[in-house]
Image (cartoon, rainbow, N blue to C red; front, side, top):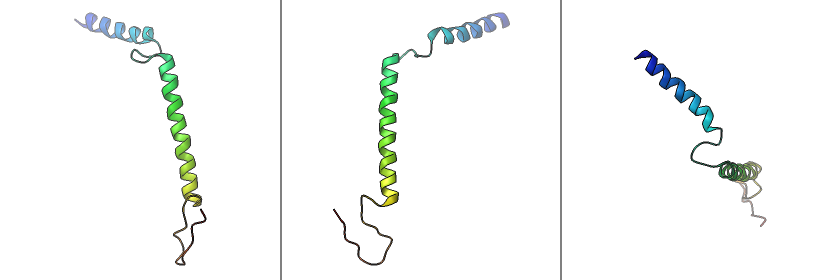
Length: 71
């Protein structure tokens, strides 16, 4: 019984390497496209966060005096 369990574990371990890095659900092109979309979204969020911190896209609410929007 121990040999059978060991054989199954070794077969699964070797089978995981035979499947490759592409996975079994997505092709390599689909994975590249998905990661490209994720990187694009993160880059856009980073720009929005920088604009928010620098107060470029909205008037400042840090002062008690009325500040006019320059748009």
